[in-house]
View: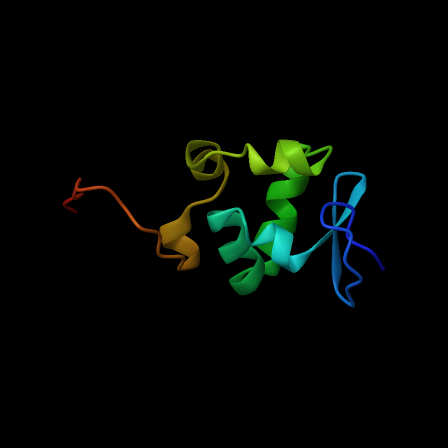
Length: 88
């Protein structure tokens, strides 16, 4: 199938809203690309929860939107952080 974003023929295509997007184009979004590689079920859950319609809306997902839906510590995803340290 062809990717609707880059137009390349790919074997593995993900459905993002109403478009078929290749994994290379999904990896352009740093956090969602990481979720796709490591936690496929969480990736699909986030797409359903945020009601993503197309690729451009997908690329505008922010880290704060994702943190409201998913607890990254609980599922074991380590993200680059700022200089703020949380003490438990």
